[in-house]
Length: 78
Image 1 (cartoon, rainbow, N blue to C red):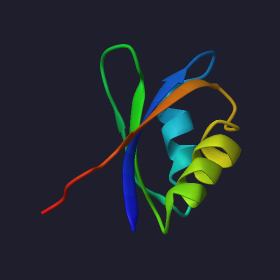
Image 2 (image 1 turned 30 degrees about the vertical axis):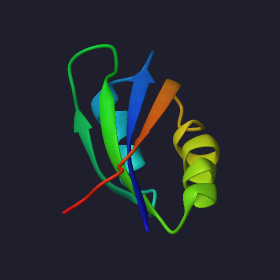
Image 3 (image 1 turned 90 degrees about the vertical axis):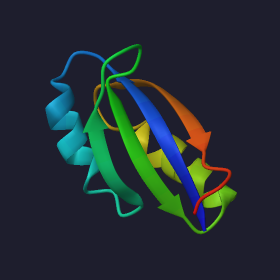
Image 4 (image 1 turned 180 degrees about the horizontal axis):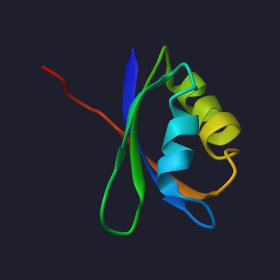
């Protein structure tokens, strides 16, 4: 199992609406509004790194209003 935090920058749409659409993606566990360079942070769980790449590039990045993402893969979990 691979877990990652995906930081998401948005533009042109309400980040709350975009967050709501993100929750429809099966691999997205939760989405939070955040302050700073990015607008949203999603916790994503996938079976492997290849699937993580597919989710980030083919699902999250394609949501209308998403202009940039950065994935932070969780290295150690208790």
